[in-house]
Image 1 (cartoon, rainbow, N blue to C red):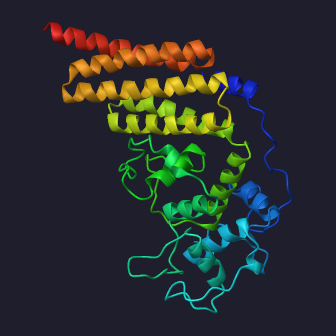
Image 2 (image 1 turned 45 degrees about the horizontal axis):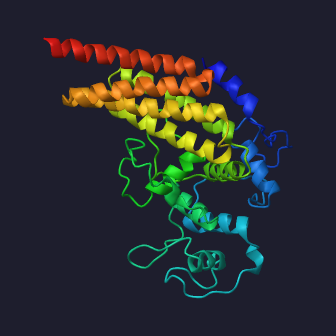
Image 3 (image 1 turned 90 degrees about the horizontal axis):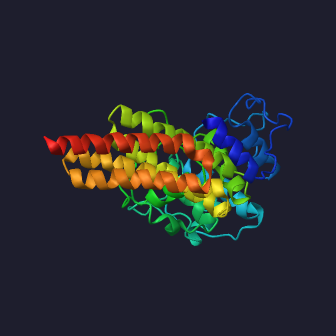
Length: 333
């Protein structure tokens, strides 16, 4: 079933070749590493540099000053930045990062901690880096405001400051849930991880991540079904929420592609199906029945847009049919 959907994607997506055949620039980032193409691409763009010994340090942690400098270097000539003083009490005027940090502060790309400090040597978290990067490029994260459902066990509250930045990153395929179903917004980043997220951001903006978005979506589509089988309803619902974001991101790039529109309907069907199971657990059988019927009909709508999704919509209908029958049988007793 996965091959069928990917074949459909190949018919509608015209993708520029991704940087993958460059010579190795850094001794510690060979082609076998996941970050290889990203690091080489960012080096070509003039965004990242190596160390004097010819290494890049992909596994080294990134502090807040380094993260700011990497992002500023992507959008401005770091050598020609204005001299700005005293933007934070713990950023010395003669520090190597003073110009980039104060430049970012003046443009509201970054803010300090409640005590007024910047803490430049503190490791940057995923959420912090996403905020810096997306703010630097003027990305309107309010566009994902309608996506308020929990996205992972550690990213469930839409009122958290980082939630829209994380949701936007999911819609750009910059990140994905790990094998435990977590998005790790507070995790410290390495230089390799920073490179991966930055390159994915650039490729999405250039229209070269659409296929990856739907590939990510397929992983979560399958996770919805396996979670329902295990009666892990919350995990199924969060996977469905991530599918919706991935499809949203793909549709922003190619809104008229039938397979993307069909996958969008499938995503709505998965959400309705997870809701049906949740209502069944809570004893609200009328709502459960209504949502199972909705999931069934949304599956039909998806098929009418593009039949490549049928293997998945068939499963949606099977789950919805069985659940509705169980509810009706229970109500007869």
